[in-house]
Figure 1: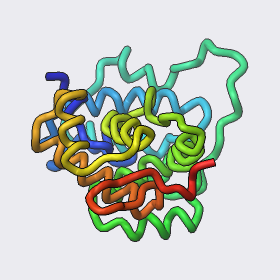
Figure 2: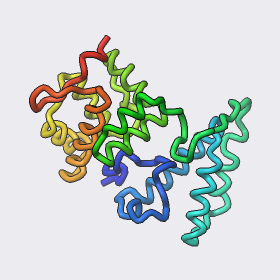
Figure 3: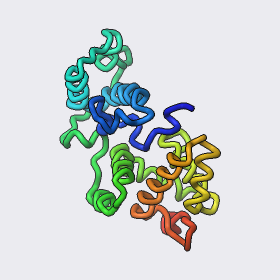
Length: 218
């Protein structure tokens, strides 16, 4: 089975993945995540100053005695060099944890109310790429915001929300059937989805069923 299908929501996040992290090393998608994370950094570099993240990951590789092949290492420094014109790089004035968009205080307060650690990490990943706001706008229009955007388990969850909602059991079953996830992985993703979407006011509970919050519908 493709390890990416079993990966947690933090997959490929430059601000979460760490090559020397014991937690990351235990993940089934550890190698694939590292490669995807490097690609993410490459794509971000032309428009966002991510030098601190690049240096951080390079330092960790050196600490572990891992040296990238020259042609691979050059990708980060030279990617998009042939493209012209390039957008002006945006200097980040925030800590390393914030890779992309500034997170407004209201969103930070909502994220702070998320009790599930993995759900909180997932919410931060989405907030950094402005995906929470984009998701709410898309859902209000009856569109699935995660059709071409990871994580895939949220694609399934949003599809079910747009078609009446889901229970924890029905979402778990759908993740196992549609994505081929194991029972354990599917159960974990259900917990993350519910623990994140409910405090963010994207879903509401009606008994055991979770439906799209009527307040965000147009």
